[in-house]
Length: 112
Length: 108
Image 1 (tube, rainbow over the protein chains, first blue to last red):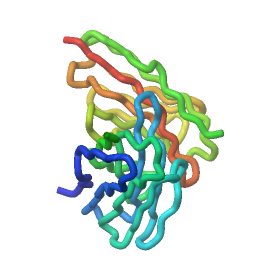
Image 2: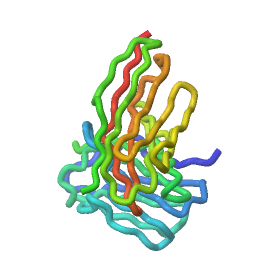
Image 3: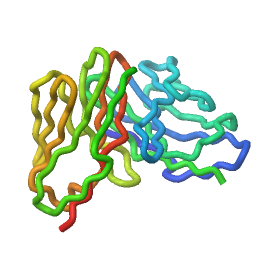
């Protein structure tokens, strides 16, 4: 079955540490996205990529970095510059932005 | 500024008690209005896309409608398994704006 796989499901980060969240899709979608979800707020866009080797900043890109070396993969690195990283992170892909997104199951990141 | 506002924040229903969730939007050049269902600890699941005012779509006990300023998600005779958070999102240009969601609780 086609879908999006995010790993790990839970991740704990120490102060000053960089961590990388994995996102892999086998839907053959060109566009991929990273969103952050906090309680009581709508999903906020961190980064998106419409094609391999190209990506754009979203609304809250500071403290995050991404790469898109393969169509199937869009990893997100949460750097030590992100001062409030505790959140639920969602990866999504779409065939076309008008058809809605397919989301992964999410990664919950907690600072310890 | 583009904005999507959902109400109520939370809704508690008895099984079989029909109701509606509201999504008010101001999205420039709206290309699509989306509804998603999200279960706790999981990613959202796509339900509907609405493209123009007057459009309606149905899936089991859910029906989504769209006007020029609002979208409604009508839930007919809900069951406990319909309990979830329902997200609304509006797409203008390449940007998609999400609402904060309505948490629906259906009691047996």
